[in-house]
Length: 177
Image 1: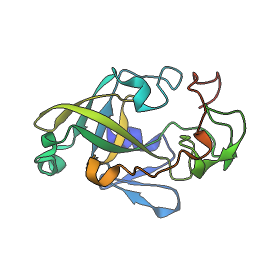
Image 2: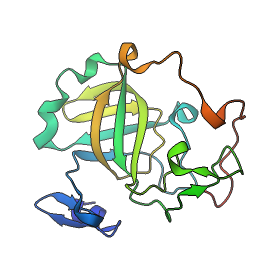
Image 3: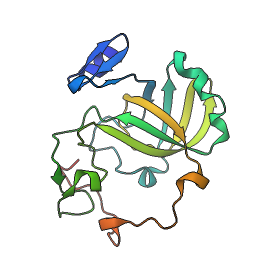
Image 4: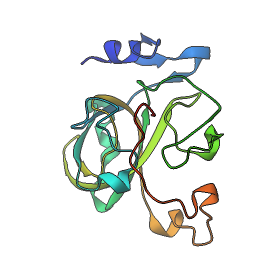
């Protein structure tokens, strides 16, 4: 699928390989995420619960040089566009709780800027293709950025779980994103 077609899915426009989003925000995708998940219903909710799911990250050639040394990290952050998310509701129920919570107090995909983030295990790099494990992302999703997961910077021992503390894992409720 070409960028023009993908960018158009979220009522956006392509200009000089840049997605021009609502309100004139411009984002230049750096690649495409390939996964086995074709629909929202089959896509896992969090990477930790899709630990055996394999995907590939195709970084566009013009950005490939930026991958230098990425293979020295075991895990990476993927930032991507939720281009198929539903209606934005600032307060809504999540998969963990029927009680509504603010969108910024959840990881719900229906967000004002439609930006998703996942931490995945980097299995290998072959030029501009990264093979990863633990993907919870729909196939052909636009990749916005990659950052290394660095435990000495990213682990915060004193972090709280907020309202999710004590909540037991449950399957995604039918009809809920």
